[in-house]
Image (cartoon, rainbow, N blue to C red; front, side, top):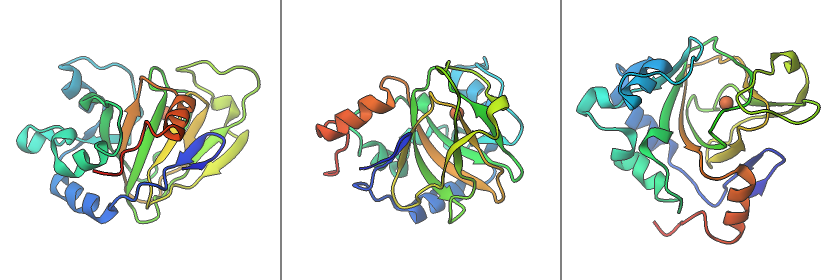
Length: 205
Ligand SMILES: [Fe+2]
């Protein structure tokens, strides 16, 4: 585990990005707006508004199966000893030109990211400096130019980052596809402590 202020690289896990590229290539015609993916998950209601260009790969369009029902995703889920619900596993697709304004997430406390395409992971994550305490589910557009640090994704090892601090996604230059596990039950700090105790990662599977 390589520790940084607001993100961690799990270098004890090596994921097979090519295997994920092959996997997502089966779903080229299953790209939907993120809001439609929310509707698929929740049976009709949309929990929050997301900007255009932020999409998901709806695997259910092929065989009715959610991402967690595919071996390629299962073997990565099995690397973690915590339970991650199927609704919290998403294959994100980002259009060229998309950028995500600075914000904090709502109930999601941190995310584990597996960049799939393009080869260099494309747009980095940007952490912003905000004075005072952060509030969840808040827009921090006024802090667009207050940059704490820029994080280029590792494309060999998964990255955990806290979504409770102001963050944004830089402008996407190439079609970008990421597998994301959203964590609602543990904070970033809790996962780090669990990993130090050997309670997070299981590399035997
Ligand atoms: Fe976010």
